[in-house]
Each structure stands twice: as C-alpha cells, then as structure tokens.
Amino acid sequence: MLCLTLTGKTIEENLADFWKNRSYVELAELRIDYLSPEEIKMVKTFPNLVDLPVILTCRRQSDGGHCSFSEKKRISYLMEAVSGGFAYIDIEDDIKRPELEAECHNYNVQIIRSHHFLDGVPLDLYNRVSKLASKGDIPKVVVNPQSISDLILIFNAEKELSSIRKKIIIGIGDMGIPTRILYKRTGSFLSFCSESTVSPGMLTPWSLSELYRADKVNAQTHIFGVIGNPVYHSVSPQIHNPGFKAIRFNAIYVPFLVDSVRSFFKLAEVLRIHGFSVTSPFKTDVLPYLGKGTREVKFTGSCNTVVRTNSLWKGVNTDYHGFLSLASPFFNAEAKQTAIVIGAGGAANSIVWAFRNQGIKVIILNRSEERAKRLASETMSSYDTLGHADKYSGIADFVVQATPAGMNPHPEEDPAPLLQFTGKEIVFELIYKPGMTHFLSRANSAGCRIFFGIDLLIAQGKLQFQEFTGYHYPPNCKPVF
Image (cartoon, rainbow, N blue to C red; front, top):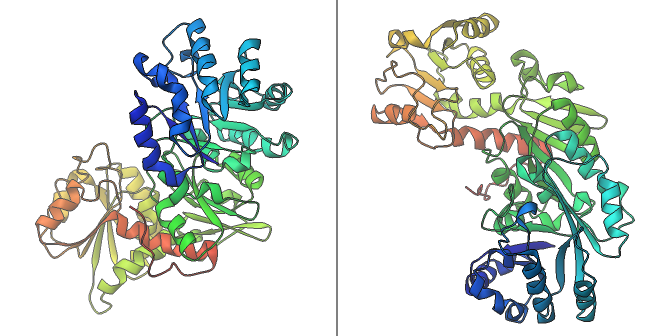
C-alpha cells in the first residue's frame, strides 16, 4: 500500500491534503507532532472524516519528528486519540507503556513498533526487525543507507525475513530512495509519501503512484534503472515509465545513486535488474563488468546502456546513435563540414566519434588542454583550449556543448563566452536543466538552429527503451516533464 503522510498544522489542512491525493493512496498517516496545540483535541475526530484506514503517529524529535511537548503529555495525547477509530498506531520500540498498549487492544488498533536508526544501517538489521516482530506487533525499521552495500542489506531483507508477513523497512535520504519505490522488494507492506519533505528522500503521492506505479510491482515485474552520482536530476524515469505503461509492459525504471559500480552489479543480482542506463561519472567504469559490447562501445570507450542477455551483461552506446538521429539530416557528404565540440569528457567522447565516423572535421575545445589532446589523438581531431575559442568563431557548421557548465544551480555559466555565433551554425546543448542555457540562448539570438538537451535525451532514451523491451517507443506516448 501507499500511505500518505499528513503534516498540516490543522485538521482542515490535513483533510484538504488527503482529498487532493486520495486517488493515489490506500492508507493515511496523521502526524499529530506537526499539529498546532489547539488542534490536538480534534485528533480523535479525524478517522471518521476520511474513507481510508489511518495511522496515528506522534514522532519524537530524537527520531526525526517534530514533537515539542513532554513525553508524559505525548503519551496522554496518544491515549486520548486511540478511541477515535484509528487502524494503526506507531509507537517507538523503547516505549514501555502497558496502559497504552491495553487501550490499543481494547479499540482494535494495530501497533506498529518502530525503531529509527538515523546514522546508517546496522549490521544486525534482520535481528532488530525480528526482535520487534517477536512482540506480536508490526515491526518498522527506518535506516539511513550510506552506500550500495547498505542497499544490498536492505533488499535482502525480503528473503531473510520472509517469515515476518507484515513489516516496514525504509531507507531514508538520497541513497534510500530506491527502497521507497521498490518497497515490495524489501518485504515491506507499505511505503510512505507526502507532498511535504517529512523525511529525506520521501516522494510525492503522484510520483510513487503514477510515475513509478510502485504499488503495481509484483514478482514478475522487470526492474530497470539509471545509475549515476548525482542521479536525481535525471528525467529518464519520466521517459521510460510512461513508455512501459503505454505498451502494458510489466516493468519499472528506478534511479540509483551509486558510490561503487562493482557493488551495484551485486545489487543488480539481488534485485534481478534487467537493464540500466549509465550517466556521469560511470560510462567508462562499467566497461570491465560487461560480457560483450557493441561496436560503438568499443571504439568510443563509453557505455550508457547495460542490458542483461542470458548470463551476460551487454553494453550499448545510445548516446552515439541518438545524437546521429538528430544531426544526420544536416550532414552533407558533398561538402567539407566542421564541428566544434566543447568538452572532452564522457559525453563529448560519443559526439566526437559520431562526427568523425561521418567524415566531419572536429575541433575539440576544452578547459584542460591535456584532456582535449588525449581525445583528439584517439579520434584524429584537432584541439585547443577554451581560452582561444574566439579563433574558431564562424568556421563551424556544428557546435556541440558537452560540459556541465550552465547546469542548475548555475544557469548563468557559459563554457565558451569567447566563441561567437554567425547564425549559420547548428547548435546542440547536452544540458537539459535548465532547458535554455545561457550558451544556447546566445546561439538562438544569433539565429542558429538549436537543439535542446532534452531533445538528445529523448532520442537516446527511445533507443534505450528498444534495447530494454524489444519494442519501439510508443509513438503516441509523451514523456512526463
């Protein structure tokens, strides 16, 4: 189930939030530690104002909550509210209040016994969950994963704790987001969501229900994803998940913040991941783990798509073909064309090779001359530093911006302010947040034909979709941006 966490200051605010998101969830949690003092007396009326089961929670500050009153008063508020028709109550594991437990049993309120481990993931995680469950309550453990190795421990809980039918295991923070989306693969019976930032990494009801369809995941669901560091800027889930839904393909596409490629391949086995996209900085790091790679992966030395094929991982470079699908209509085999590529990193690598394999002369401009020289040597291109960019104004048919300069939160950055446009250039920007970078705006003002970063992302994403599913991206399906 998806559970909507309500954190309004008043009962009225919580009701408005509930009915706004009612279609996305099957359960609600009323966080009375967020209520203003004068609203506390209204808590027991809440369950009768909604049409879903409600969890009663009053979280202490030491466990990440907002409760500012004394422990004695907190327990008294819970005691008073229990008779209001709540389906569940969340009580911390160190609370020894027989009178509260007795009151819960009297009113048929199920107890969720929770433990918050906010500094990491304990190695004895399974033992802690089992100990909580031994009391006959629903165990809930909240942890703060710091690595992919921690995620492996969390996702193995489904198998290791299969005898505990009803449990909740949540990873908070950026590293924990996959546990919220793939909550069923941790063995959890629910995942929390909210429109406010209740805890780090919590997603909105719409995204969990409509974008990821997390509540539809079952044993047959194919898991795909994107790995990177950072990764949550990626809009790839907004391309692939709508595509899966449109062709009725039982699959989900999840972002994974990765600290170790080697560890992620281990996680991929635990979760039986069928394929994943690769973004910065791992497009070369994945190469040693591939059983085979396409021709483009071999000569670019860059892989942005990994697919499971029988017992092997296959590497593909859809950046290369995605770019060609946009640029090739402007290629002229009868003329000598020139391209300027700004940058010499992984993104630039595929672009330079795409031009060179079409016989187009390439000039690589980069802040670091050494990196530009290395890529130029590998691709038989020319190179120079960005400090000399003014020398190349007006000589290129194509200009591609392949550096992070201009990306949020620094949209004012221009990677090549000395490079001027004449209006005849076809200009590609690889950054897609913001859509119109300062660099692209200058090109547009000069009258150039421009392509946004999102254009390339969608082009290569559709090719990835075909690699993942074996089907073309549905023509009537629009990514959700």
